[in-house]
Image (cartoon, rainbow, N blue to C red; front, side, top):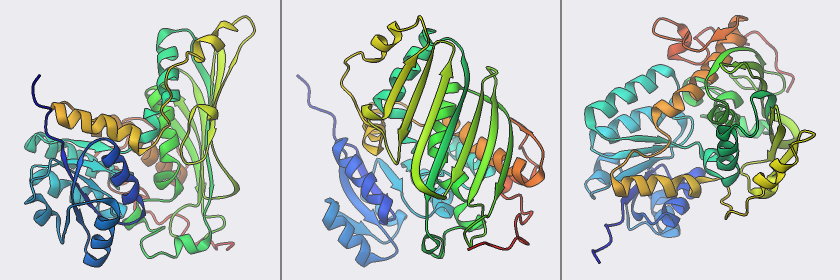
Length: 366
């Protein structure tokens, strides 16, 4: 028997809250935790000791000298694309926490850097990787469920005003948007992953209850190329927090309700009359994997180890980011937006608010 391949050597840049989820997932996936990077060296040192990293570095360039295979970017959103560009130029594969960029232009720039460097960016959309999503995708692909028809995708979360008082939150040029970009994106990414290309969207958004530059709620109606219709709500002003997805097919309804991550108990399939056998297909007895960073990182580390393309690629993430941009464009302009419409020259290609200063004159109710 040959020797096992060496473990991929990983670093993390940004050691705030979400970095802990990345570090634990990297450990579980078998990566070697090499270096933690933060502008606050004290925080980096504490994080490295807590999570088991061998050392720290003051910059990405210094970290790369340790011989990394990949780096996870866990900094505030405005620095995601610039740091990813730097990491690619240094010869590193990159894992980007959501949102992977603040604009579609930045995504195009990252795709260009991938082609130039030969390295890859993987975007964190971890709900794609739980067993429930995989089972639903297989049943859908088999034709057993019939055509997708209608459903909803609700991210109904609650954030107090203090959440937005953190300096980098709720600002278009730093966070890229409100709950549409930073919260609900996980749920409607799963919706798009399962139901395929979206065709057009009509949306409304507003700042109803929080002092913030961005929206605190948006609602949208999405038509898919298949003809299916779904509503999408993204809120951070909903006291009973929940994340809900409902998929109505010809032969069954499949529902998912959870909060920040799901397991098998959060799914339910209801067969249409005469389709009771679908309940047996759903309960297939396979070993269940919950959604979350560990599920996606297991695939990422496997791909890095084998030299294959890690999930979720920038191309995979583009339709999700494009829908986020289109929700803002529709809500701000009052027009229906079609997929492929937001390109070079469109103000929403460069920035989610199109620099049109939406809701500037509205008075907050907070």
